[in-house]
Image (cartoon, rainbow, N blue to C red; front, side, top):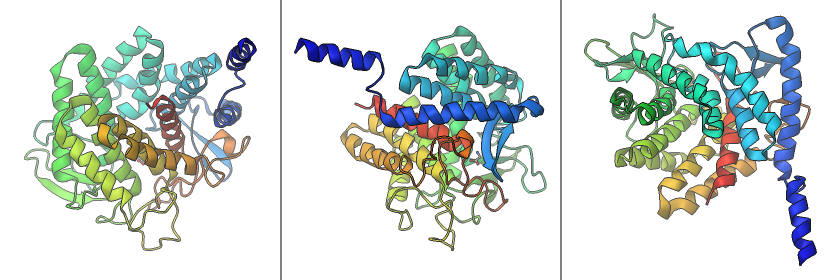
Length: 387
Ligand code: GLY
């Protein structure tokens, strides 16, 4: 017996007991760091991996909405493995993003800063991260328009939209709820709740699918258009948009306790899980209404988001805990299979194949994309911590 305990202690001390998937992910992320450094040399500020195009790793600068995900992935890898080297690398990819805290030209503040600094703060309690995030939240609420009740998403495409707000914007509210808890400044909470309520009213169809872009009159708040930018059609159901909605309202319920958000999140979950065109492996086609289904690309990023959201929903809805956890586990099994998980030393170190960024606009079609990897790792952390 004594020998057995000694053996177990030795195994966990030397890390032999580590989940083989985590070891594989560590090897692949080692490769990613090597590739990122090779590609970064001639490109100055562009150090953040985003995707792979024509077998080249595409790196972006801090302004890109995807700049925070790679650092966030490294924090999650540290959390999964306990290997300090990932925390050091996470800092290298998080700290240079600080300047974005003053950038009011985008709604993507949560995507850029809560991924790296947010996870870094949660894990290390570094007070400098806290100050950066509070400033980021202050900058972000400057985009709120009291007439519309929402944060304006984009400044581009002015020929099409006056005051566009996209379903993706729900994700940035987590930064605002956090800032309210930290500072007790109710402005953050009021903006986040107003945005969530207005989006709940205007973005959803009777079947609980979501539009992508709602354009508002900035003076009266009247809805001018219900459109898509990245989906198959204005009336179609763009897969990642549905996943942003599921994740967003689950998080809003976690942060506010408002039952209407829980009901909406559960209705979205039912819409997705019962969808006649949801594939058996639960990795959706990029748009549920693409007429080319089943000969249409998948979107692994939407699946990763759904898995992460289902683990969250499981903690919030105790009597359906196992139900949501089972679906999340099933998605992670699919994404960890050779059909989606890139072999070590392939895909320039990116983890998942088969995501779709913007099919109608001709970019990132059936490709590795950094946010798929980020939410995949987040879901693995949530799986590891599940009770
Ligand atoms: N937030 C942009 C996208 O989902 O592609």
